[in-house]
View 1 (cartoon, protein in one colour):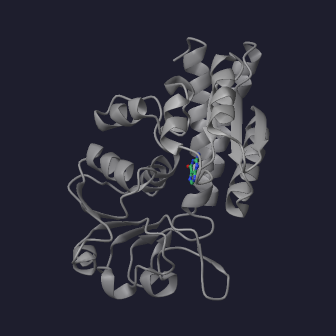
View 2 (cartoon, rainbow, N blue to C red; view 1 turned 120 degrees about the vertical axis):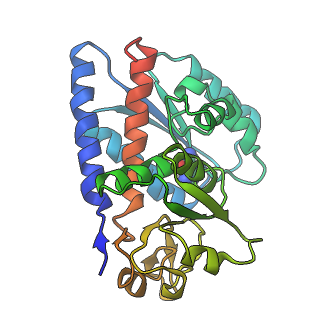
View 3 (tube, helix red, strand yellow; view 1 turned 45 degrees about the horizontal axis):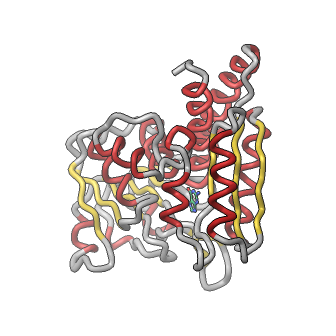
Length: 284
Ligand code: GUN
């Protein structure tokens, strides 16, 4: 039976460390600030944004929410980002994705100043991650690595399979595993032998976006299984990309949903915002 890596526990530790450093910055007269932009009324995005604001309050950051109507124009959104880029008391800017269809997501990501880009989505930050010279890591992959480290799992020389190739999770995840000398395979919708590749993996990161995609027959005895998915099953219950019970019976380590990668994403956002405040105040 697998050891369960608790994202609740690890994220609480990360947030406590951030809070301590935030208190130290405040003693120097610096109050880290995060601006969160949400456009439209996607219910999942609303939940994520509320959680991000609450996390800011918990660690002692100032947060500003910009809840814009779905009909917001590209020009209005760009003008807001420009204004936030120029305000020194705002250290981090996050625009919750996805945006309504008529808005150009790429242009929005490009408009956020790279030193305030706490999501690490800007091409300049993505490039820096590629060459291993970065200030910010994208929150979800960074959270996964934190869980792996906390559990004492050594990635070096291991065969790693990442399922999913998104810009937000799959691609940077592969990069971070490679930085730690993992041998990485990325599976996606066009991959012909995903099950077979997974069966040979020591570490599987499931970021597919399909409920219970990773079944026990796809997992080798003793593998490490990290579940990035947040889905609803046929009964509307929250579930991950992993068929949890049967996979947990075979794996050596597993992360639950909820309480696994999810809380880590937000904790890493706090870490990035703290880093942004330090950089912008000449302390990092
Ligand atoms: N939508 C889904 N995940 C994320 C994330 O990490 N950051 C932002 N800005 N939007 C998202």
